Image (cartoon, rainbow, N blue to C red; front, side, top):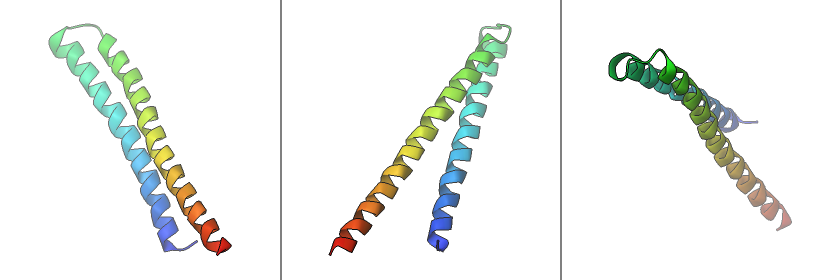
Length: 85
């Protein structure tokens, strides 16, 4: 493994961590804001925000993971095609 591979892994894992944290924090904040300032419910939207944040984090993580896997498969296909020549 060379430096580019390590940087690629660092980029993917830092992006995944950022997406998970930001998604959950934003939805919790929005749910809490709605609970306290708009409808004055007792935490219903905060709990809903937690679940939506977790779902959003999972969905976005899957999209990032899928993009990374597709990129690796493309590199692997190119390597196999190059080896055949």
